[in-house]
Image (tube, rainbow, N blue to C red):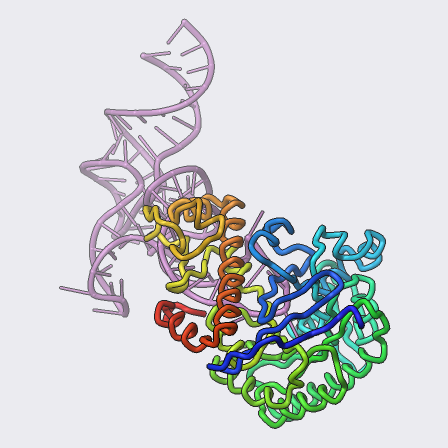
Length: 374
RNA sequence: GGAUGGGUUCCCGAGUGGCCAAAGGGAGCAGACUGUAAAUCUGCCGUCGCAGACUUCGAUGGUUCGAAUCCAUCCCCAUCCA
């Protein structure tokens, strides 16, 4: 673990938000950071070179999906996930815990672990904390996540408590099974939407001394103020010197609000998914580029954006590509959406450095149409 | 000129007496999407004052209680033969 470190380098005097550097064997990550998601060992529609060009410092990939296909053995044989996918910067792998939640219909959970029915071929697969660690060791991600139990919204207190306690037991098992010094392990705070449970979970995990902490089980359908409230509840109990990762969150407004509340890391499929489905982030709000009103709009997607798409193509052209079903449309929209979030985070870091994050936030929301947000 | 097969709502195409404003697909329009079972999914898609009424299945006329469906004539289209 000597190859890893996290240092908070600056606090915004206006907001208390933090700037930090997370060092890994594959490079440094400047926080607060947004991590593009590459579930199946690829950020959909993007090459690693393009990811680098838009400023990506770390990507996320997935234990469950890679276990099913192509299998961690094959990836290990290829020389690990970095080499296999041609990405030499840091990688974080999710544990498969989220699939316990999202694939609820095709799995059975017990204390020992979870039996999945593969969504690909129906075959039965068993993932436990130990199996998840083994797979993540084989993949060779820089940051591994503990195998956790995520709950839905709404969720009653008893169920949330059970899931949280099991998450804690599983976190200990993950920790006990984690041996590789070239990989860091994050625990995950759960507790659904109950302040007492969230605080209890934050404290319990803090006592376990992980390298960093995921905040899981949020952004699962609850109103945003509830999510923000949960963040505010737990932050006083999160270790100050450890990175905090709000899992699965990534609309532009949520990124800003998250940083304001002390979050250092984010990942989200939203940017890449909505890009493929014809929706783009812009500084004035969401643009559904497929809409007929853009058919003759020859201006760029976002006047303020410096990405390849915005520098070279019009809204009318992007719309045409989507209407024609051309794969380039998905690529150009993905390049833009990812660059939009990465640039947003660059600006957030700059604002923290200059002690004006609240000013930045207010300026952002003065232009960004929240009525068309997610 | 002859033979045969056809003309259905934006397009393709099903429907051959009532259960038909008319299957299905495409196109079009709109919506959803937050640790990716997602280049996916959902809704709308003749007109209106949308309950209900009205107009529509090449055209016109007819048969029938009732026609996109049957008959007559005409107009187009495709293929083949001269």
